[in-house]
Length: 181
Image 1 (cartoon, helix red, strand yellow):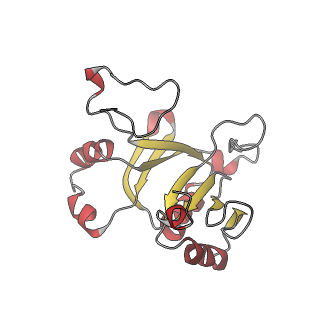
Image 2 (cartoon, rainbow, N blue to C red; image 1 turned 90 degrees about the horizontal axis):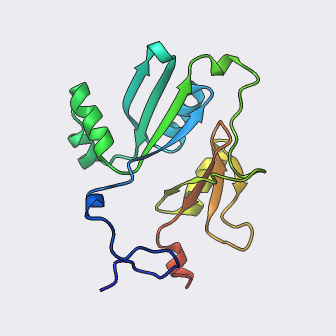
């Protein structure tokens, strides 16, 4: 039986046994102003701050956010050490990194990866109804790159966070419903 579910050049069919248990834990984005970024990710997107780590000697703070349902919320340890272990053991975490003082420096800006030279492109979230989510984003004044009714890829949206990073907004079952699955 094949290890992969689709075919592409370069796939390894027999990975090193040492990789068993590896998981993608988090993606890191640099942020200029934590107040603006945390408001966006917690109020606009509904994520929850699960761990904050301050590194005074190096003048930066890490904010770890995730989507948690009520069952997940009950699993979050109250003890800081245990919560740190829990944070680094789960999947689907977003790390926002703030270098102290960036918010006051007008020269600080981050490359979103979508202009030249291209690189990093976006993170993605899934929502129950992409059109309804985007109506809400519109009402909240969120900056759109692409609305779900625009362009050839119907039902997929792209919004920007306060630092200009792109966030793809998808509805998990929509591509299949459109016959593209």
